[in-house]
Figure 1: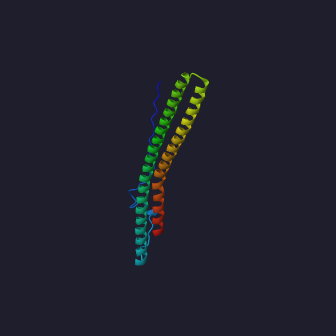
Figure 2: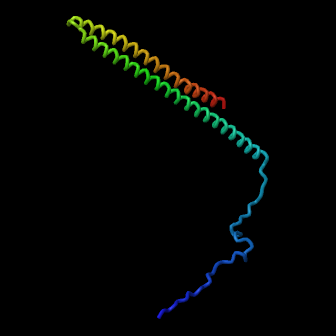
Figure 3: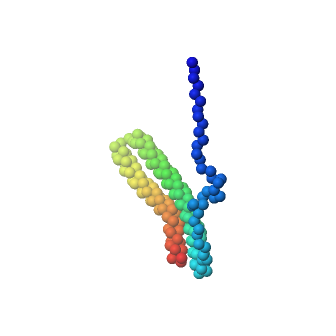
Length: 165
């Protein structure tokens, strides 16, 4: 035999908020109203005005600095590319000279020819390496100046602006 159970429904006791005119009345705090003196109001308005001006200046400086950083990175990237291309050109010139020297060495007839070729090659490579080093150094100095000059000018301008304020 199957027995069925019936659940007794009991009404839960929930507060009736409709009976209260304002259920949050217990949390209401009466604050006294008062007038702010004109001097205090003027002082606060000046402070807000100065804060807005300072914020506008800071925002403008931040935007200028962001542009400067972007330009500096672009200049540095271009300079690094130029230095890399020069380094490849130097490597190619040196390897071409070395292969030409090796080819000439195979054509040497006497030991004196070998010594003369070796001496000539060493002198030419020393001169070429000196010129290559000087060119790379000048390029690196130009890159350094092009990268740091705008940054230092911006820093000087910012400090001058800060002194004025």
